[in-house]
Image 1 (cartoon, rainbow, N blue to C red):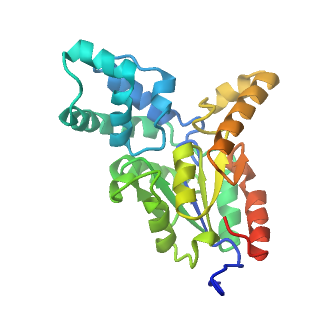
Image 2 (cartoon, one colour):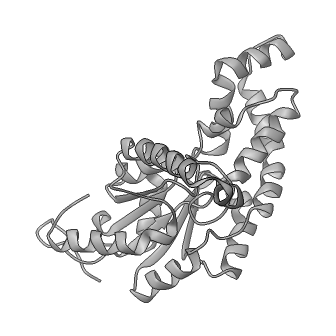
Image 3 (cartoon, rainbow, N blue to C red):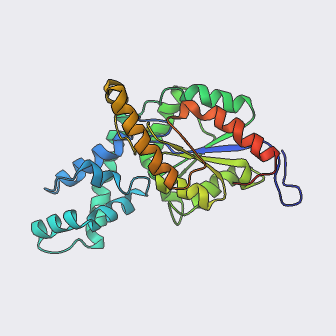
Length: 276
C-alpha cells in the first residue's frame, strides 16, 4: 500500500466511504422521512417534509432534538403538552422511533441504480469500501444484509451510535479509514447526499463527493423523479447542485452511478500531489 512521502501523498485512492440512504440505497432518502412523520403523527403533530429533511444526516436522536427545537414544532408540542419538550421526551421519542425506522428502512432497502456496478469497479481497482450512517447499529443491520444480496457489501460499516460525536464531526469517517487501513486521509473519498455528511468528510480531511438527485436535496422516489417533465428535473437538479456546492463539496454529481469518473479525476489530482 502506498504511504505518504515527505508528508504529501501522491498515490491512488485507497478507500471510498459512503453514506446509506439517498447515497447507495433508498433513492430519495425516503425511509427517514416516513419514519419521522409517523413518529410525530403518533404525538398528534403533523410535520412537513421540509422539517423532516432539515437535520438529515444527523444521528437520529439528535435529529429528533433538532426537530423539537424548530419553532413551529416546539409551539405545537407546547400547545399539546402544556410544557416544552424535555430530554426525557427526546429519549422516549427515540425509543418509539427505532422500530418505526427499522420497518421503513426494510421497505426502502433497494440499491440506487448503478451502485452494484460501481462497487464492482471500485473493488476491481483495489479500492476498499466503507459505509457510515446517521442510523444506529440495530437500524442498519437488516439493510446491510439486503444490500449485500443486491451486490454491495462494504467491508466496514460505522454507525452514529458507535462514536462519541456524529456528523458533522469526522469521527465516523476517520474510524472507517483506520479500519480500512488507509495510509492517508488524502487517499480517502467521502460520498454523501447531505450537507452535514459532506462537512463530516471535509472535517476528516478527505475528498468529498455530493449526490444531488438521488438523496435529500431533491427528495423524490425514483419513479416520481422519472415522471417529472425534463424542465422540472433540470430546475430541481440545479437547485440541489447549488446547495451542495455551497456546502464545500469537491464534486457534485447526480447519483452514485457517476462516481467512477470522479475517482479517476481525484487520482489524477493526487498524482500531481494535490490535497483535498
